[in-house]
Image 1 (cartoon, rainbow, N blue to C red):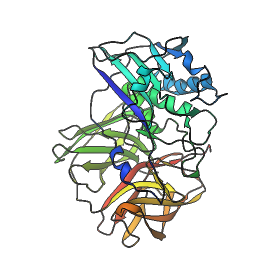
Image 2 (tube, helix red, strand yellow):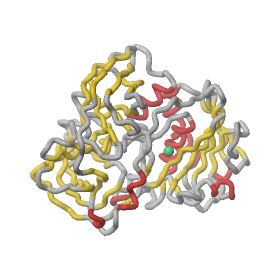
Image 3 (cartoon, helix red, strand yellow):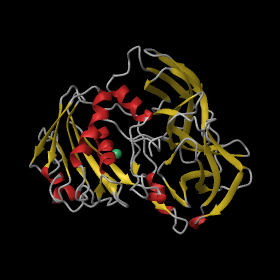
Image 4 (cartoon, rainbow, N blue to C red):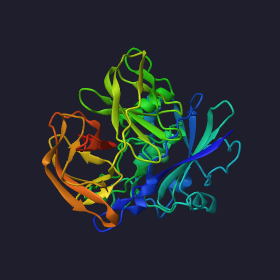
Length: 423
Ligand SMILES: [Zn+2]
C-alpha cells in the first residue's frame, strides 16, 4: 500500500584542500519503525536486458551475472528465502502507486523514468522502490542502478563496485533500512573505488551488523544455535531528538548490531549471537551530546534480555565528523588488516592534539596517543593524525573510533573501522 524509496549515495570526499561543508547533510536519518518484509519466497527477480547490453556505464567485460548471483546469495541464506532470476526486456522502474506490475526488476536503462529518480541527487549510485501491501508485506521491489554513474566488477578507479551496490540494494529489497554503523553494508553512503588511494574502498560486504538486522527481520536466528534479543528503555531522552544505540562485544570491542530508540526511549536489538555486550548510546537533539555506555547485558540464545536505564547524556563541546587516511577524510569506513600499523586522520570541530585521546573500546585496535598531531582543514574544521595498530589476532569485524576530551566527553564514528583479512 505505502511506497517508499531508499537509496545509496556516493561518499563525499574531502582532501586537505577542500572544504568540508558539503558533507554535513549526509548524517543518516534513522527512524524507529516497523519494517516490511516478504511474506514468503520465492522472490522473482527480473534482470533487465539493459544490464547485459553495451551500456556505457557498466565497464565492458564486467561479470554482471556473477555480481547479481553473489549479491543475492548471502542474503538468501541469512533470510532463508529463495530467489528466482529471469531476464526481461523491461527497462523501467514501476511508477509510484499502490502496487507495481508484480515484477521485481533490476535495471540500468537510461530511460527518462529511471533518470528522473536521480534528478535530486546526481551522486546517488542506485535506488530501490519498494511496494508494500496493506498487511505490511513487500510485493515488489525495483532496483535502479543510476544511469548517471559508472560501475565495474574489477575495482576500476572512480567506479562503483557493481556487486557491492547490488548487495546494498538487495538489502532494501528485502526490507532493511539504513544502518547507523559506518562500516555496515547498509550504511547510507558508499565509496567509489580508489578513494584515499585505497583500490578496494568501494567493495563492501555483509557485516555482523547486517546479519543481525536480517536475522531479526526474518526471524531466522531464534534457534538454540544462534541469537537472542535485548530489549529495554532509556528514560529521560530528548523530546524530538534522535537516540542511536550500538551493541559492542564486551571482550573484543567488536560492534555487532545497531538500533534506534522510539520516542519513549524504548529500544530493541534482535538477531544477536549470545554473549556479553556493552550498549553504547548517542543522543542527538538541537545540540550534540557525548556518546556513552548505557550499561552491560548478557544475551542468551533464544531469550530476550532486558536493560532499563536512565540517560547519561552530557553536552559535547567538540565533534568528530570524518575519518580517513593519506590526508583524505570521508564518511567511509577505514578497511584495515590484522598486524598493520596505519596513519589515521580524523576531522571535525574543536579538536586539538592537546587534551584529546583516541579510544576504540578494543584491546585489538590501539592508537598511539603520543603520536597525536594537529591538522588544519579549511572552513574552520580541525583534525588530528595518529598511528593506529591492529593486533595480529584481532577478530575481523567492525570497530568504533572515538575521540575523548579531557573532561571525559566522547564522540565516535560507530563501526568506522572494518578489520578484514581478505584484501
Ligand atoms: Zn540505501
